[in-house]
Length: 297
Length: 297
Image 1 (cartoon, chains in turn orange, blue):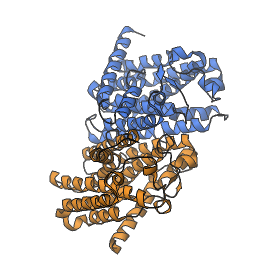
Image 2 (cartoon, chains in turn purple, brown):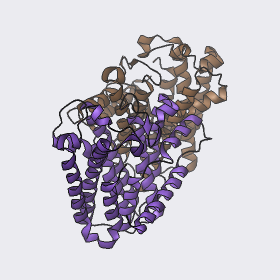
Image 3 (cartoon, chains in turn blue, green):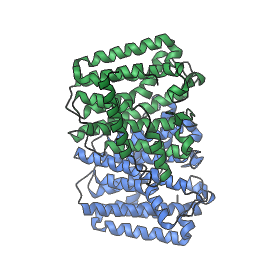
Image 4 (spheres, helix red, strand yellow):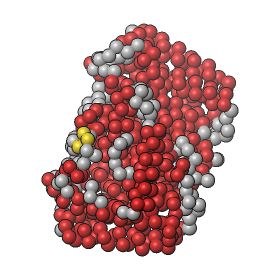
């Protein structure tokens, strides 16, 4: 990781922390417990990978940080809501997340259910509250992209396929379809949304970004599976070895550890090839591809 | 109820059934159980009060049914998601809704959690997928109105206040604040959203509509409390006497049955006075005020 990239990343992360803290209702707004649970689940945690991707994609079109911070916040709020609900007893029943008790452990199940609901709403609130594009019609398109990426044909659908596949033998294409929705769709949305905040892009350019986003989204999940197999809970900040214990199909269980690592490297190479024509403007995306594939938690 | 109103209401209800069936993913889309649970929770049920209000408000500005049906669908999807989550064991733990088993009873808790999540997303998907206003900037405003009405400062916040107030002595103003959020905010959004689909309105006109919507929203809840006290479960299609059993504060428990009925009538009168200047164009709103206050389930 270069010093320049590290400093850029910290800048974005700190701007995101401030933006998220500002768009979420304060803890002294009624209902207090709900707002406390929402803030607990979003602030002071996470690598902000999706906002980082939005900022890096935005750099390709010279988008302003003032716009990108709201796009990043919207995507991160969707991500946070999905974690809160995914951790609940009816789903993964997990007690640790980002090194602290999950929302329903800290605030109770009812508050976690409502907090997740309200975090999702907050994402669409943010995307409709600020001017994020030169043409309002493009901003409607962005909202549509986020909704489609998050709903039953996107992330939420992927969680459903994941849920219904526990204990079942998935093929590799089925696993890729599941992750393409569960993790990939929102990562793709983050990249695309960032690219709408600046200068206009040709269809071919956007298709290149999209190819990058799809490869990186998949690589992200492959690496997640590798880490779930290799890391311990302390490094991971969440319960390790969970997928194997739950008898869930993973890239590691289907391909083996070495082949899964090889696949992640291949996907990274494909992602980088797609954005090569953008040159220097895409250096954030290049660094993020490294960061996502080489991370240890 | 006049024949003309009854027929208008049935037209809207049948158009809404078709629209909702069309905007929800088909049951043969993966994940099957999730889409089945979503359709189960939305179709063939409910009076569609919120869509009816959107259509009636739209009539004031000559909005087209082709636009209003999507506004109605978005608001109804938010309403449906809130019922699915509200019925879950962590919240009200209810087993019957609209005369059939609640979503988590029919499809399990995990599917109900995901179905509610995806129904909320579907609402914002719908509002960003079709042209609903002449100016795209107005449509962004509509999305903002729906998000604000649904989130932690609106409906979801009201559910939180309700949740945290079980067994507590609420004052009448506190009860009104709670219901103003829990039920009122979405009813208000339905009316306002309908009014954005047609000709432009002055601020004074929109304030009149808003006053109508606030009064009717509150009246709706007062009548709900009266019905919960008076009706049996068969007429209600859901478990009756639940609030009293849960020791929840209601208008009836605070005011008594007679005063609660009187309050509903007063609110109706205030609502009608607000929209009187709209004349004949507001006749749908007038009929709906009757319908909401005089209903028996």
